[in-house]
Length: 448
Image 1: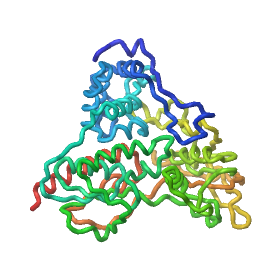
Image 2: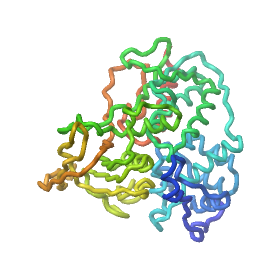
Image 3: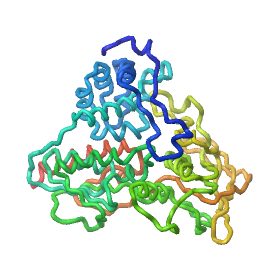
Image 4: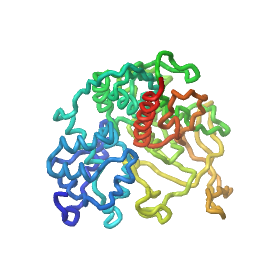
């Protein structure tokens, strides 16, 4: 711990976002960066707590106090080595992780100003690429082959670990490029795809075999492998099957998000296939991060207005006694996309879509109340009878994903990531992928 009093003298400083009127004109990353001096000062704020709750809260088990101290002292390579020992791809998590570590920081409890852990992590990863700290590993092969099905964050981490353990790893994915939701679900303004491509070049150079645009039937896995890692995620989005669903202009969130990312990558689509919000009143149903991504994308495409509705009640602002520190706080959240201009409403249940000439023109909604359960379980939803029709030319459904039903597999097949746990955070998928790799390794070491 280099400066034991830094947290008393140095306030939290975030890099912040580019100005709204500038960033909504492009798809470049909205988050800015601090200079090296300021970044090291922010790292010095870490108190090296006796019980590091940041480490406790991190799904991948990052040792934040250790690499914060190295960063403060200017030992960037040491900081990266400590970070990479627990997190395979800190350039991803440093950009898109919601940072449960920061919510569990002792400074979050004492002053409301936790250490800028996520931003520091991203800075360390960028320095590692810039300065050449990341080297190509050439592992000694052990003669066994593993197939990883799904090139999302869980599959990529599993493949990375298995490859470095000496297994010949073949990575299959139905899409044309690796990354899963990192590439096709998260907008470029949050995660530029150059960041993914940069890492993929290292994985390929280290010997991982990429088989893209290659769907795999999970009931008939490819032959010739000693073990399989199924990391296919949750490909089925939760739909809203209410009257009028057949109307044109109603889309699942990924129809917009994936297509926009593909357009930015150079692909072209027929005008009739485009999911574009230009000149439209957009209604986003679903209050989570995917809904937020639809908001930012709609604004950049030129939407006239954007409204986001959520069936659940508005979370508490600031503090929530039901989720006290160091737990993850269920509180009101405003994202960079929300700041760019949208209206938000809560406790609205969608009853039916309305339209004209086969196209959606609005959604009939009903206000609901949530009554606490007597046994302390899930609250009960009560319709109030207060109905209205919200005008909309485009409706985006962003209500999450359905946990997949998978076939029964043999003992040499390991399911990981969202495919096993259901839709969750990227950092959870990465932690699961690492565990799957170690489970496969343990299995193959004892199997004949």
